[in-house]
Image 1 (spheres, rainbow, N blue to C red):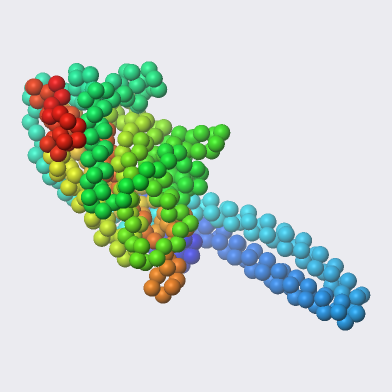
Image 2: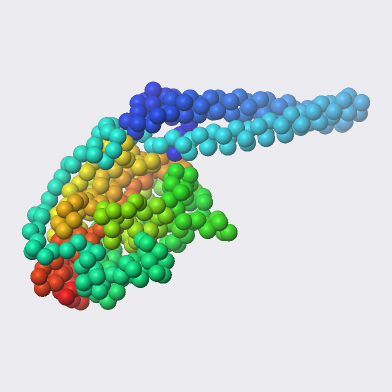
Length: 424
């Protein structure tokens, strides 16, 4: 969430940044926010004046009673009754105006970094890096959903029977390979200095608001109405909320966390080959990395996270590319995002496997996540997160790119984790 003072003092810069996002009602939204803040501050001034007058009268009443001037004291007491009514009315107005202002601030996305390219859709994203040879497959090569059926390692129909479309059942070597990839990702993250945590898979409303999933992505989240809890769309939500309402010290930086969780998303896309099999799921596994950084170090940290994800894909020997997302495709909370995509040879298309983002202080403002700087003043921290990695499309890429006439050859780095070299 942007700070209202920043919006008020940098209106034109905010509008320029939001224009890069193609936000149609940006000017109206920003001006309404500034107006609500002005009205809130006016009410606050009125309330402060009334409270100050009431406090003064209370002291005067005490002195009058002590001096025996009871009649004058009673007259002043009547005035304090009126002031209390005014105070109550102004307090209610202030609370309502504060809620109105907060609701408006929740609607304003983060300002993109100046290096974010202009553009409206994913077609306008910039490819900034590409690595790895695209394998030439044998003539009978299959997409992963056919391979899963052929080798009986993932059962999509059984998942549909148990829960519905988008909930696969991993079987035999498929289940072992899934677990192997999770453990490999976690070990790689731990070796890179990320502290592993296990976190709840359900979060409360405050947690969803703090990281920006609510109210922006409310329709995409599974919601338990009885307890008002949400199934997590990513481990980013519970991990980042570890630091909600926390005041750090400068020496605490950097804070690096990693977690494995299943993830749940209600909106899994439309029909067609591009969402078949593992391409788009309602439930999927993901290993996440989260960092809390000093504001002067966050972009250095972002580069480090990008290089870390690159190292994993290099070890898996998967052809991949990195995209810098344009203003129209960047997430609501992000200032800068790099997407990683793996090439699926059997499908002849790129599959997104990771997003690595710097939110600057946007999430921290919602989280009330601050640190004491060298001058002893409180300052908002910066937060970052990335998929390291999302499993479904990594697994899809592995199955398709590593298939041979004899079976699916497991990348060497995963063999110690799964205990086999071939799925046949």
